[in-house]
Length: 85
Image (cartoon, rainbow, N blue to C red; front, side, top):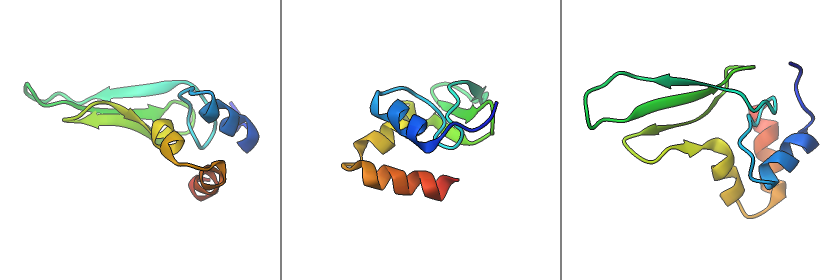
């Protein structure tokens, strides 16, 4: 799958969809590390490009696009996308 344009990725982030900020793919590969209870250690990677997109480490699961939506301006999100690529 080829990379989506930054405009498409920005629109997906604005709409609240979970996607990879590098390539725009929705698919994720989930790695559940086997650790003893009550430890939680989960990593989510993009299935297309391998970019880390979220996870949990003894906390609630967080996706990178949620953090990007917390930023106030779309201009800052555009800067983040340029840094990631």
